[in-house]
Image 1 (cartoon, one colour):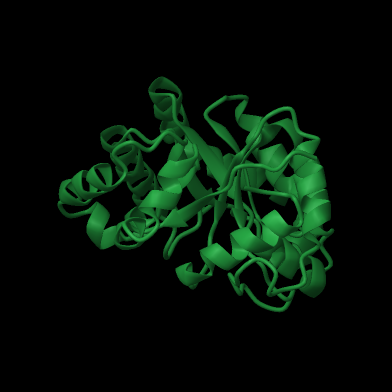
Image 2 (tube, rainbow, N blue to C red):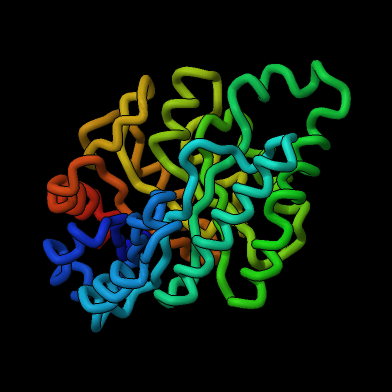
Length: 271
């Protein structure tokens, strides 16, 4: 396995600290400022200009984390769907202004869904129908822009549910994201498979990975090496892919980036 170049998920306030590291190789960058509704509904152009200034000379791939607070993408309520659709459009506006080619959004599947969808006739199809009603316009616009919406696992127990949802769009503008800590939590706490199984199930649809370590009990976002994820198995599964997804460290304490890189370098997995 050859080492893979790793990037990070950062807010503008943190980019300057890691600017030299981001620019030394073609590292993926995910800008996370634009998850906030207040910013999206206000004048976000100054934040875009600030990010552009900070990443001048960056040669890696650029994405953003899209909005997610306070909603789900599979609501049955048409009024709620309208608000979510608006947030998706605002996120795509930012992608257009920033030059980002990827936007992370959150999976609709909950632990309750896993245990109850087959208990309620038609429930599986209803989730897909509601997501199409919510995201249909955004996916079409993303196609026209050359942007990919990547659906990140949150509570997902069976990775195939999210894959089937993404496949139902039959569009290059929607794909899969994996958060390693979320998958590890689901594995230990709700009976999901281990992280490498998530990678293999996503296969050719995997376009983005949040790298964070955890203990399987909570969403820790610890530095790599502080938790119990079996990183060699994760990177072995990634190495089997024909494509290289955006790979970004998503740590609660950004000060853990150097230690995370040192840990992965020590295993010969990343650079």
